[in-house]
Length: 437
Image (cartoon, rainbow, N blue to C red; front, side, top):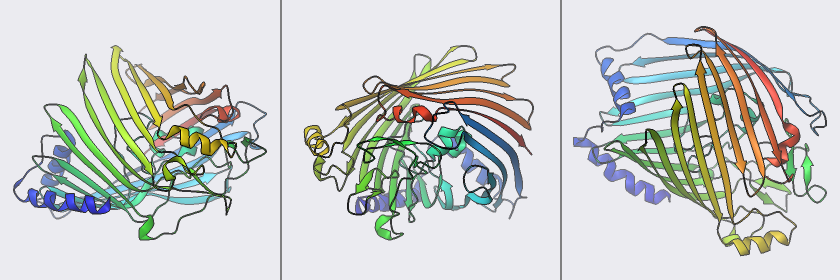
């Protein structure tokens, strides 16, 4: 996989010698910003931040988690950025006081990177940064970068769902294709649901039950062998956005299991995919496909490794009436080598999803009071697993500085071993106040 990416990289770099970036709005904005600063050696620092108070509580008192509070923290963030000639530097750091976990103040380096302009058609971003791509809304089939699921389940701002990684990302823009090549030398993985805040289903506890017992995870060594390489080739042709994706590295979730050490592990995988997005009938439609191959699952014979999967995502976003927008998605996940996988897992008493696992999502967003008030709901539902996850929220922006939000994370399902059903007792409500400066 890595040799293939390097083979693709060399001719694309050579193409940039007599090429220019295509007419893509994001690329134009970045290049325009660079061009504006070419005349000066440095620009002043831009800076700002916010102070935020978050609080949440579990709806069910019978939750296995002993904490009735699902969220209780104070957060102070400071960000700063500037241009130095043609190069751009950015910093964002948080100071967090968490009253549930370690109960102490701690610092969090959210991002710190340098955007280095190598040529008119080439940019290199070095440092801690958020990597993201794909067309899904809360569904990531080609975006295999780190996520923070505790942040999502507790009601923290959506911006904290996607974690930052120490990475080098090379972006190349040509008449023919745009390329993003990301190298992540140090693997960190997701902030997973591990029993600290939210209970989860553990098939090895008393024959399988929901537990708040801390998940034991084996951290991989920080070696080149465990680094990750991700590639995106994209093109906007006549208003249609096309993209191809590739990934080689560890899966960001500890979905494998080492029976000798009795610890969950991050399995190694290869992934390839593609997406198309275009306007359709007054809205925006997207189609995305992906193939996940886990290198140690022995084509389904290893019951302790995830099965290979083919994934298809179809989505559509449309404004129904002024200020009311609806978007829906259908995700189909086909387990490959299904009979072999089923036979291996049954031997250990492990549960199996259907060969074709289906997930439907619906997002409704309504804006009122000069778009200061936002009413929204996002719903996951699986007709084969018979489980759901609903995220309603109401937010109000009083002015440019003050922001309020109240919302909920509601889980349910027929079975406790399904994706959303296992979190039934972790349903919670939350509220947030934020002051920007």
